[in-house]
Image 1 (cartoon, one colour):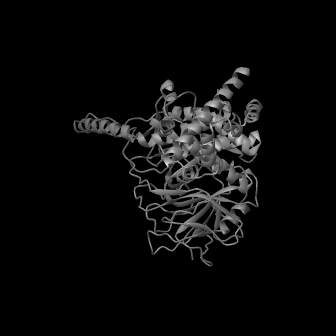
Image 2 (cartoon, rainbow over the protein chains, first blue to last red):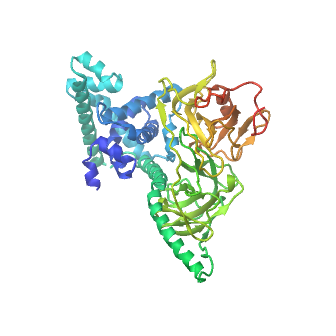
Image 3 (cartoon, rainbow over the protein chains, first blue to last red):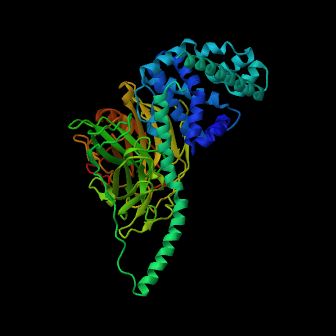
Amino acid sequence: MVGDLNDATDFELLQLSGSDGEAFAVFYRRYERVVVGWLMRQTGRPELAADLTAEVFAAAYLAAGRFREGPEPAGAWLLGIARKKVLQSWRRDRIEASARRRLAVERVEVSDEALEAVERLAAVGVTELLDELPDDQRRAVRARVVEELAYEELGSIVGVSAETARKRVSRGLAALRRRVEQIGGADDAAA
Amino acid sequence: MTLLPEIEAALLDAVARDHAARDGRSVERLRRLVRLRARALALVAAMLVLTGSATAALMLAGERSAPLSGVVPAGQVPGSALVAGARYDIQIAPSIWAGQIGWCGAIGTGPRSSPLDSGIASCDATAPTATDPLFGIAPGFVGRGLAYVLTGPSVAAVRIPGFGTVLTRADARLPYGFRAAVFNLRGPTALARTVALNRSGQVISGRSGLPVEPTRSWFAGQPSVAGACSLSARRDSPIELGSGTVVTSLRPARSIIGRAFLPCVEVDVGLPAAGGTGSDFQAAVLLDAADPGALPAPLPGMEPVARHPGVFDRSTGDPAPIMSLGASAERIGRAWLVVTGGRTLSQRLTVMNGLRVGPVRRHPHVVAQREAGRRSTTQGAPR
């Protein structure tokens, strides 16, 4: 079953999450490094990045049933949640925790080893990895995830249709995730 | 290999508990089958009575429930907030999640003779009905350790597949004659398939028929969505409103045992001046679930606050903020304004005073606006 789930699309995993914990586990593992890396780059503090990672995935689980396939790829959707959580945390000067409270996620201590791994991940920050993407994908991901442009706006800026803009964001995020997984795999092997 | 295994485990444990809570509702399909079987057995029993062969009601046997407060037994899962030998205290409070009528439970824990400082929350936000009297199923941590099931008054025992039968117990802190079965799970069980038994050992089964209220949500920074109720920040108040959810139409839920509450709107509230991780709040407007236009019942476990007429607070135990049991409330017209979270009563009062409760829209005759001079010193009707 796990093998089947590993082949499932993000949309399928999110749809199954409400009834199948393993589906959510696969979704978590698929995007953990992307989210942690992005949060680490935004906050610069591994403990805060770990806390917000839990918050982002708790919020994603609670909202999974509302996720619709297209026009928003799941990676952009997830990083959009992460961005909101960071903004809320900065604005209120405290770590956003509403989704964890709602889902009753127990507070846990993260080991020093895990926090060191988070720091190592940040050393090859996700944002820098964007530079490895083809130009059209990099601009699309930045515009959509960081600047939160609508696909119509994004498309009009770069002179393509909204659907083409969506595909570029989707491809860019998929490439980004693969690259982060490669780095994570190398890190695990070294450890 | 995951980067943050502790975070992953905590998330997946919470997801499993969420599934278990919802399975408790979907298991009604199974219960319908059980009910059919029970009817068949009842027919046989009736025939036996008619023929004079019936002797006595079934004898109910099982493990006695542990108390709602006590010492954590051995056998807890490493990593759980519960540690053998520590103090535990099971509390319940109304759900404040918009549209979800029911109760939330939590096991608070802490060193003996010290305040509760941690715990495990389990909010399935369901309420007991005559035919579906199980409403709070808390499966411990990762399905093991100290667990409990809350029930309506008619439940004498619960039968847990893979574990056994536990006799329920009453407790003065449980409202409306509710009962609880508290036990220590030692291995995997099918807690979501727990069955309620009456005093004769017969299965109580059926559909709860509780309505699921339609809701709409918004994120922080977005305008709030219009619904049946509203909460807004007063001008010049020190609070910040965040994301929220509101019920879009009100329907009475008349089949519930006891008096239950319908959370009509729920909003995240920040108090920037307070700072710190523990100072997030949730505010909600609670209506009477059976008649959203009626005066809602007193809030269980809340006591009047000295020098603050009309304000009530959960004074016993204020476990970790994650449990959302630290709460203050004030009756505003025919509604409760409830504020949970924060570290202190003072913080919650600041939040409460910064909020404005709008009118309830389904019933124009219900005016639920904060008005000076309408505060009461008991949880009864406002003056």
